[in-house]
Length: 211
Ligand SMILES: NC(=O)c1ccc[n+]([C@@H]2O[C@H](COP(=O)([O-])OP(=O)(O)OC[C@H]3O[C@@H](n4cnc5c(N)ncnc54)[C@H](OP(=O)(O)O)[C@@H]3O)[C@@H](O)[C@H]2O)c1
Picture 1 (cartoon, rainbow, N blue to C red):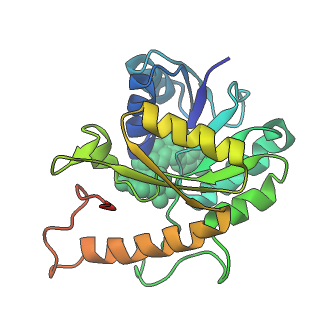
Picture 2: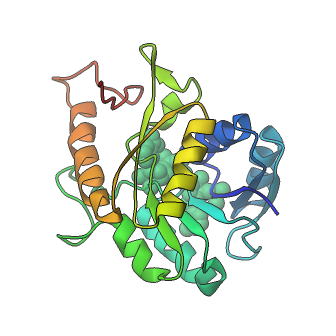
């Protein structure tokens, strides 16, 4: 049994795995590639398996994948996810135009994922954090904020605890429907990042709330 299962071996998977390992968590990595999974697992002293084939061995699952793939993963694992916490990190931005989200108006990726696994608890987190900043855990000397939204008090607290154990600052912003604003906000932030008019807001920047 692991503390956390990370699906994928990309930028966010690597960053979150490294942070979780620093928090002393035991990690299961699921990848489509045995080699990529084993390589990331070796870095964090974890175990690995094949996505869609091997069982999820923890109670907290992070599909570190793009939204359409996250949907497929939850559909595949289905009822085996009952009672588990699913952390949705996705930014469902139309990267063809950077002008809209790919989720229906009045919803969010997190809520769409919750519909697929009604007996699991989806929590939105990490979508406001950029992978390039997870190694340091801080930007410009400021600890990175991780905005967290969820309907289950217990699951939301578990994710906030993970964030804080990982040396980042969790800010619980409300119920899962707040994911709509978290996702829309990142559409705006990504527009700054791709804009020549804002050269300082790049992929190594961070969203920070100052009290
Ligand atoms: N990059 C960022 O700074 C950032 C910031 C905030 C949020 N996000 C969100 O984080 C998520 C991941 O982004 P990323 O930048 O880490 O992407 P990425 O580097 O491309 O990694 C995505 C991973 O998903 C897995 N994957 C891809 N297609 C798959 C499929 N058909 N079935 C199963 N697994 C598949 C792959 O792992 P395997 O090949 O090992 O299976 C891949 O490494 C996205 O939803 C993104 O919106 C990213």
